Amino acid sequence: MLKPRIETLTEKKLLGKRLKMSAANNKTAELWRSFTPRRKEIHNAVGTDRYSMQLYDPSYFQAFNPDTEFKKWATVEVTDFDTIPAGMEAFTLPGGLYAVFLYKGDHREGAKFFQTIFRTWLPNSDYVLDARPHFEVLGEKYKNNDPSSEEEIWIPIMAKRQSP
Image 1 (cartoon, rainbow, N blue to C red):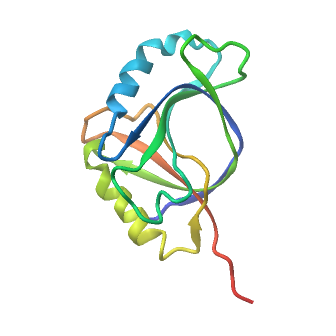
Image 2: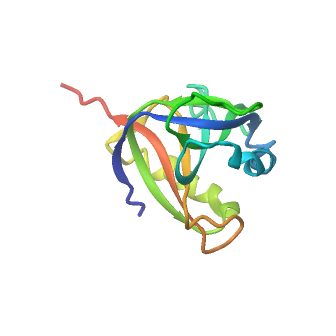
């Protein structure tokens, strides 16, 4: 059974690139190929972690359709938005409550892990999905296409309303 840690995130300033895509037309590799070589242009990064962020329409998870588009970002955290390299954009990630899952393995096997989060863990938890960005933290243990890779999956949540 999945056992996430529940964490309250403080607001973060992120800088990077974004693309519109769907689960059926996944452009994640293209997005990161366009961002990664330009990362060195960001001189006010906070640490070395990368943030892979998804912005979904509030109705996205109500009737999942692999063709429904969402925005995906390839970013790093920055101290401020004073200098934004050409072709990149700023995004303020709002704070809030998150369920944080540790995923170990090749990212190509990740779909099953996400299904377990949304179909098993979330419905059986004390939480519901919140309409804020979802993201993964790709830290020092992240290795693209490697079975020993590790990343954190951050799912925005809020407490279920208790009946009186």
